[in-house]
Image (cartoon, rainbow over all chains, first blue to last red; front, side):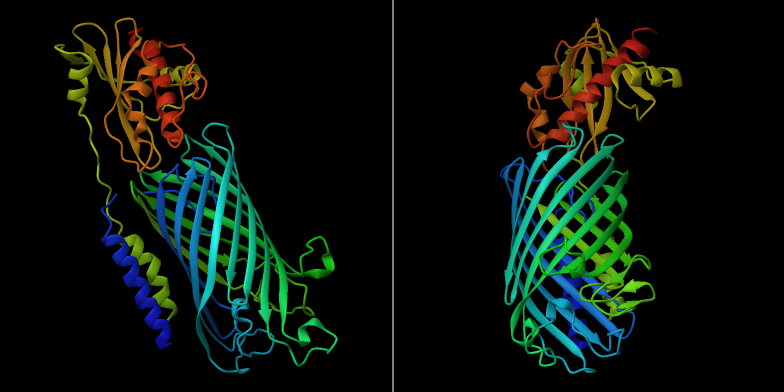
Length: 316
Length: 174
């Protein structure tokens, strides 16, 4: 709790400093969780901060704060590259909806935790690179199309995320719709599980493999100069291993929905999105029914009740 | 603890400062630059629904404001002050037309975006000179796009097309 207060206070301070130090003056990420095809022009750069809060597992307490420090650069008008540093804090207690034990978040799965003890850990997650290449511009071609790739490497973590981004604008570009399909391959180094069969891979330390495929759609309307408001919907699907065409390897499904608010001016922007997992469509294929589905929502692995993301950045 | 985290994003949005306006030229300065020595008689109009419909049909561009700020120029011609949609804010601009309704000059009065101020470049704006209602004005075909300033380039091009239609439908016919 004390650590949580410390990070919350530090977060508030960092945000306040970032904004009060900026001459008031704008931009691109209209959404918190959905990408658009707007990129930095050639030779322009930007610093961006992300704060993602994930909370609620149906029972007990569960909070994760993910922090990302990002630098973006326009290699050309159609190719943007970025690099970022990620770290996160997690606190949990008695949050397992199946047996009331304490269950660490998926990203902390290799950390030992007493079955009913407090979990309170901060860690460096890893560093990531990102490249987005725009093939079609919504301002010239009528529809935007971009391809995205993001490798991440960290202690006991490897991840490769790729994404197709579509964008369509209406009402003189004041109404923007975006659609993303995301494919992510994750490798997490996990300690052996003594309870597993000796013949199982989980019995020994191993690299656990997972595939995430997400579908997301969002719309945002610029209701006043500098201000846009919108809605985001995401459908997240997970598989054990790397074969998403193998239905027997499906593990989890969840749906999220919520509003977003975006402000941007000449040099800075801030975007806030708050999503809640919808009480429908949730599936936990990996455990006997109802598994981690509780109250219609999935609380397995990296699924939770609420997600809020704040992005803010400065353009140079 | 949860309440504290909730406050983080809301605290941020609450202290966002208002934007600075960067004014490059006033309406009076644009008038003097486009028509040296002339005097300007305001003939402001409110477009009728029929005129708006005709302008949108003729230009394929939406009319956001029915109030038209137009001045008759003593030496012949017309001066129009208008604005088009920018990335975050409207881009105020001025259009000077000669007595025949052809573009004499385009001036960007204010530009408040981080990128794309190349639309203020005289060489880019001069592409509109001499254009009349009915002329082809398609970005990337008839008007060169400014890479990195595509949204502004498109909206200014569309805005000129709309104002030329406005001249033909609501000014020249009055």
